[in-house]
Image (cartoon, rainbow, N blue to C red):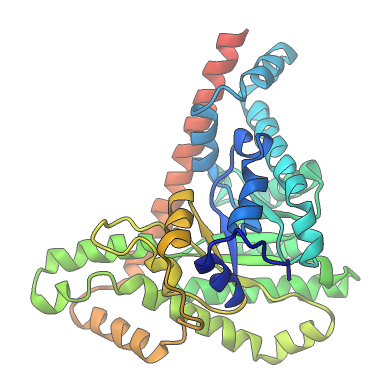
Length: 374
């Protein structure tokens, strides 16, 4: 474990002491090149970074830091797809280099940076595999994660990537059923990698279980139902769902399949809590950090959530182990007429579409900048 600098706020120290890796859900060229990321490592205990198409679209649109490279790419005659590939992989490679010391100090557990395959490929297994291979080879850093969505078509791509020695961040997980399939895909990938002679100790994975979006969707249904029992359940679904996901992870860790892989040097696929910003201002702004504290987890926070947690986070070790309460919430949601499976299915569809829309926005922004530079 990394030594904790004295300037890190106590709530973040307590979070790390409880076994939670603090990652930043943001990435931009100025953040990497101007020392901001290195400063967050030093002053906030940040030991990993996640990105997604929305983050890249915001980054490129919100700064002129990309203008020189965009002008150069325009002169080279690159098309917009290749230009976006170059921009994003360059940013991620540079972020990997900033976090290289963290990667070494944590023996490869952290210091990781994630880049997502083109979200338009989310329903195409073979194209996702090809994209993952190309991203892995292009960034060419051991502390990289390739983000693959947990769609039905993404599951075999996850297994194949891991089997080839590619470290994977599985993204867009909303349901317990799909998470169980992700856990199985991870084990299958490790088993194949081991059979192929790949060193499992250098192969890593996280599973990004989305949190706040579940409350947003379920709360809307509860308000539509409108009676007192339904309204009383507002803000309970996401945390209960995530807690039961952690129980699934614990059950997998106790399985014979995992025990055999661990004996061969495998690393566990840590649950990663994603979408941890609070969407409803009526809720405490740190709730998706505080209520999901658990060993062997990652919490990836946007900047505002990280700042809030540093300022007034109340960290209770092992807060996640409220399984009876989580089961009660699930039963009560079903009792008032909320079909959580239908909610999470819709969230997956919407999640893929949101990232696809953001990717198209990114392409449009880069296209306009390159045309202006030509």
